[in-house]
Image (cartoon, rainbow, N blue to C red; front, side, top):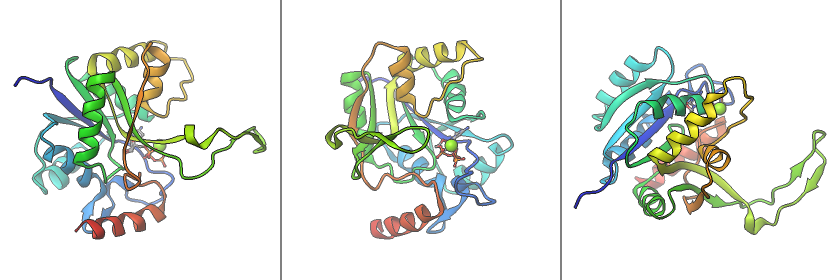
Length: 235
Ligand code: CTP
Ligand code: MG
């Protein structure tokens, strides 16, 4: 049966400033393999995904090709794109490079625990809703604060989710949203995820889909300890 093309955009052009290591966090090793390897391997192994576009920092293209893609035999990587200063700029640069058909799975390369069940759930949802993101209900109570860190509001916990990736869209929809966003270059954008771009630019509701509490993003040093134990548990 014919089905629409699915592209995974894996983002690895960040600086990793909160990790504070000399080697950027996406290239640090957990259980002997680079952080970035794990998500690339998950998308390469998925029967849903047809191609991968990897987004890396300036000067890192050859490093990624040699030390990750070739070293671990990662398939489906059709393009390596140099990212931008902010995450949304990296996404935009990748979206310019893909055809406007089918679906795109935008994923943080710093999130090694995406798996086939998350890819499958988001794929089913995007076919129905056009735009969906993986996430999980917040375990903690969340408070909105003012500039001086005084609590001003406590949203009902039932309605608070923590957002993960993949964030999955009809490719034409997310491309249209991003192209519109980037038209005005002076704008202070404050964009921290892709769903925001669709919410702001298109009249389309974004569906939240269950990711997993293991689908963590490697952000600060303690995340590496947690990631090591999650990988050991898997093996
Ligand atoms: N990312 C990217 N291009 C950027 C910024 C981020 O491709 N200009 C990627 C990162 O490599 C990461 C993902 O987006 O895989 C999520 O971003 P984040 O966790 O914020 O990573 P960094 O920006 O690298 O970290 P920090 O914010 O601590 O500097
Ligand atoms: Mg960042």
